[in-house]
Image (cartoon, rainbow, N blue to C red; front, top):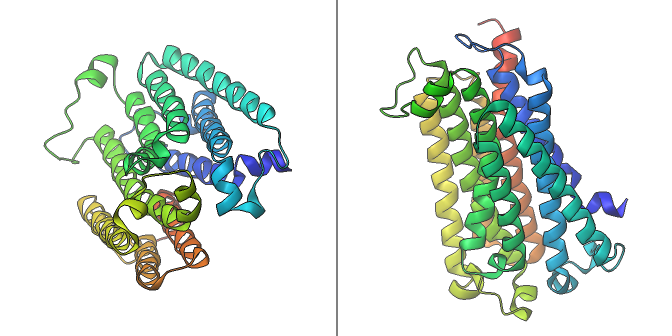
Length: 320
């Protein structure tokens, strides 16, 4: 049970649902040259490897955070209290070896270096983030937000590549922005839109978590945004990022021409939750209040990332 808590299963389930949900929306898509590849083994291995890399990242993050967690989250401390450090590091390296092996397999069968590159990049970033960058000014927040954004991007690359020959894959032009008659570009643009939304919300969420953990981070001489700039300025940054996320989501919906009350409903729900988090941020001052904001942002991000599932359902089963 403690080993399961260590990998944060709810977060892993959200990642898997996001990838399968987006894949379900893309497969099959009008004009798509592939059909039902979301049920094929290569897509399963892509999702599985992404999920276990995230699990390994959670383990190594807790491994290097033992000292801070004794102050910030003594009731949720797992490593040293319930799981030995040696066991945790063995799990981390085993998981990463499996993920790397899957990346080699995917790169070989898909004839693309992208999968190996992204998996290796993610594994190394999670290690160095946990060991060093997490306690540096902003860079750790940006790196984790970027890794979150890679989840929909990986799905987009997978389906995008399935719709093109090798020559088209390497020479496809993304700009100017034009969705008409180009299913591969629709796939990529939707993935990138969701990635930007995920990046912004997780960036804000990471700063909120730093506000929550100031006491323990001070003991480690960390240089997080709240410690360097203070609580008030950090709240301004969070507010600006959240407002940018709302604007980015609105622009994305406008560009893909999904402007009906039925199709924008998840966006409305996410916007309301984000605005709630913004209001709570203004008055927050305690760990409990910052944790509530953290949960609000996480909920908004989950709703946004699962929007393609909702679009697929209403396009399949709802008559307009």
